[in-house]
Image (cartoon, rainbow, N blue to C red; front, side, top):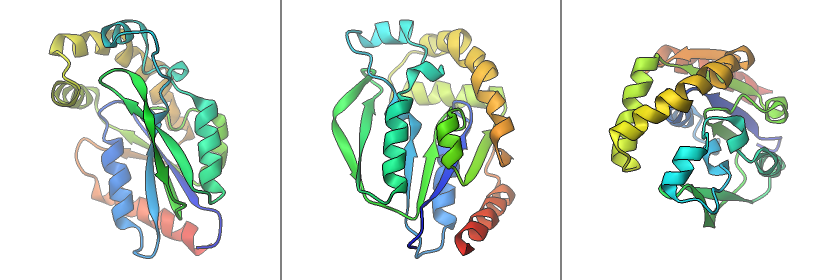
Length: 209
């Protein structure tokens, strides 16, 4: 492809299956189409001067203010202009941005996935396809609990406390309302192959242009 890359946004609450959907999209792309996944989590602001425990106590990681939107827009523009781009990396275990960056090459399709991928108006204005992954709260809570336990070494009590304090309220205030911005809303309590087929059709139409 010699035209502007396609930008696909995938949003949804914690544990909804956003990452799974993003990889399913990569799998259904034609073999000659290059793609990459960019995670909104990479653009968390660094919690400098705070221990991990202090960060979890004081930082609302599900509020829009937790993200560096200016940097995200800069990097997105760079990718959409077909340039090699350095992307930040975030270390969940210490709640800080890593010194290392990842360097990504230009691709035909860029998939930005994250809890608030459909929040920022500047990002929305650049998107070609906007998807919201809709998963029941109880299923999302179980997935989050298991992930925090396995990957982030957090206690169940900490996860439950965060769910009550910020995850559930932010879902209602900021995350669920993003559905109004979506072109496609897909239920995802389990793999939804019919929805993936619909997404595949939308992508094929765009690539034909």
